[in-house]
Image 1: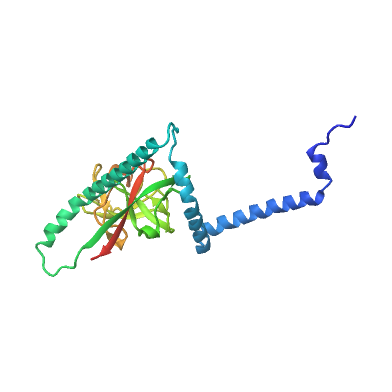
Image 2: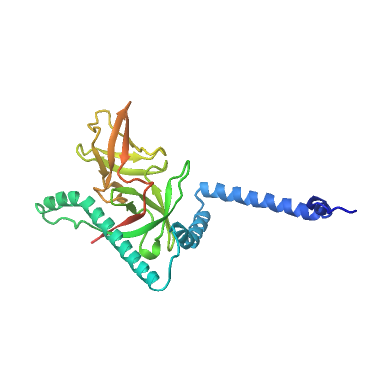
Length: 278
């Protein structure tokens, strides 16, 4: 009686096939390592490839990110639910934008009061918002970023500030046609020009990867205190002045830690701040 041969037996009859399989695996691993090294080095070709891939998978991720509870009926029910969903999204967008304008109101009021006393001043910057949904969290042990469903086609550009209804979220570091990557405040590569709201001391907010960014270049005689609000300073022309960032929660051994107002783990919609000259 002849027993069925194992898969290993048949593969042993084709040593060339095994060799090709092993060589293919080695090549795939090698290409993956090379792409990883090139990406870490900031190679433009790899960044463009990653951006193109993000554009391609954004629609799929957007569909996968929307929970589907069940399909209970058809016809009129589907039409009604689609209408309610559209209305809900519109109301959420409106609420986000209204709260974002509120963040700027205090600083704008001061600026307008000062401008009334001046003549021949340079017109201030005009600010507008582009609201987009958060598609996926691309966070990791070393990288803290998110992918949003909006890109160059919606007027989103690299280095634009990103906020939600609570405050500053981060900035755009890559922008495709229909998607963009946002570097969050807590990423170790994040650096934001900020200032203490009361003492008006200008410093740099640096991400540390632990959820608590710190203030760099704080002077020895600094008057920054625990509980003080931190806002964007407007320096370097990257972020508009006066965006709420966070609050000082501790000062120990010269290390000033800030708790961001925006919770990066609870982001549904964000707005990209587009600053243009009038």
